[in-house]
Length: 109
Image 1 (tube, rainbow, N blue to C red):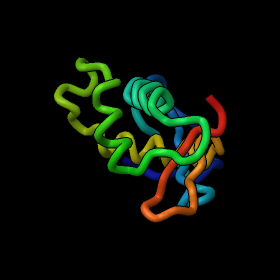
Image 2 (cartoon, rainbow, N blue to C red; image 1 turned 90 degrees about the vertical axis):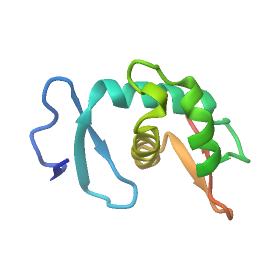
Image 3 (cartoon, rainbow, N blue to C red; image 1 turned 30 degrees about the vertical axis):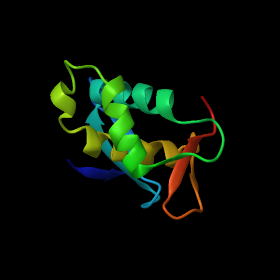
């Protein structure tokens, strides 16, 4: 996938531009349907206040909430869950807690 700056022209049809909290100012264009399904599932499992879920908790739990057609057998769910998590953090929709192991919770549902 190609990274582009925020000054780019935006996403093509069927695509969505996502951010990465770890690399401010850069965006990536990804499949909008896959993103939307993972975002829906991720927001469904994240608690609205601390303590949140660890990355392991997210990866184990989110698979059961995903469309079997888009994510057969949980295929690529780990990659998409991390991508969506980083984007939602950048947009301040979810928050990373300062814990070990790291945990995340929803700020806006």
